[in-house]
Image: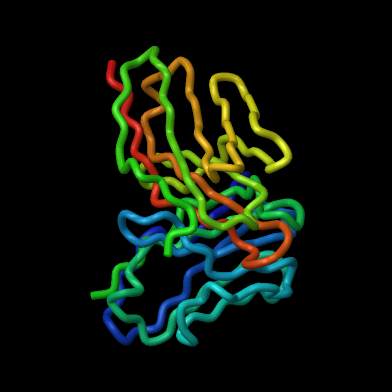
Length: 114
Length: 114
C-alpha cells in the first residue's frame, strides 16, 4: 500500500494478557517510530528504529513493552501482562531518512485493556 | 513536565477568517518544529514545519511563525475553510541530542463555523 498500515485497528485485551501490534511502514523507509497516545493527550514517543537497529527505546514505559523490526521493514510492538493504564492508541510512523521530521503516520491501533 | 504546551484545548473560528493556533515550548534544545493535523480515527498528517534558523515559513494558506526568544510558535490559517476542522498538534525536535522522537503538545481542536 501507499501509506503506513497498522493492524489490528482495534484490540480489546483482558488485564494480564499479552498483545502484539503490527506496523507495515512505507516501502523503503529507513526510520520507524512508535508513539503512544492516551485519551486527550498528544502522542508520546516510545521507540525508534533505523532499519533493523533499535537506536532509541528511551520512551518505553516499562520492561513489559518490547519492540522489534527484525528485517528492517515490518515492526511489532509487544506488550506483556497488559494493565489498564496501557489503554491508548498506538501510532506507528515511518520516514525516508534519518530524521523523524515529516514522518508519515499510520491510523493507529486502539488498545483497550479491561 | 510538558515541554510543548498548547494551552487552548479548542478554538472556534468563522469560515473565511484567520485561525491562529499557539504553541509554547520550554526546552531550549529544540531546533525544529512541526504542525500536524489529525482527523478522528486517522493518524496525524504533517502540515508544515520550521527550522530554528528561520522565523517564518509559508505554504499556501498555512504560515508558521517562530519567536525563539519567547519560545513560542504559532500557526496561521488564512482563509479558514470547513475542511480545516480538526485537531492540530504542535511538535518539536532537538537535532543535537535527546530522544529521537518528536515531543508533541496536547493538541488544539479547531472548529470552523460556517
